[in-house]
Amino acid sequence: MRRVEAVARSLGISLRAQEARSPTELDTVFSAMTTERADAVLVLADAMFLFQRKQIVELAARYRLPTVYQLREFPEIGGLMSYGTGLSDTHRRVAAKPGDLPVEQPTKFELVNLKTAKALGLTIPPSLLLRADQVIE
Image (cartoon, rainbow, N blue to C red; front, side, top):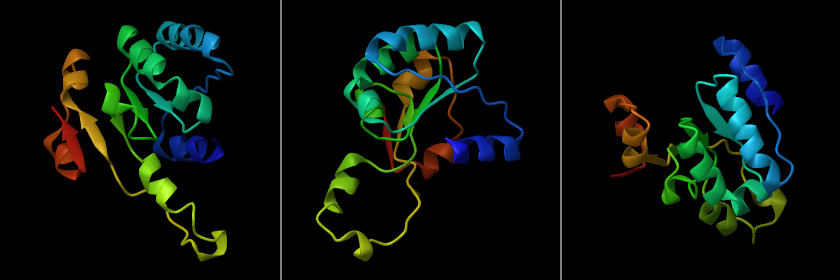
């Protein structure tokens, strides 16, 4: 979270963190973000969020909040887009010894879901679509 806050500051973006510690808090958090007029949402990789991805994607759609996820598993079921690693990439590396793994930063802009973008009234710039590893139409 500290890295996200530092990058937001460097870009002049106002960031407001919201926490949901249980699935029952998710609706309240999305409602609060709407009340606070959030322009967009970033869902960080988290085990609870992954297990509740269907609920999170549905809440983002209901509250009409453009949402970016760190895992491709979200846009695969209707989320707007992901930037980061997918679980299949991560799982392939689990068998390696930690010291043998290279230090990497996510470089994949894996998925853009055009159906979701259209439902939110968003136009995805062609330059972004060209960089996407996969576009869901």
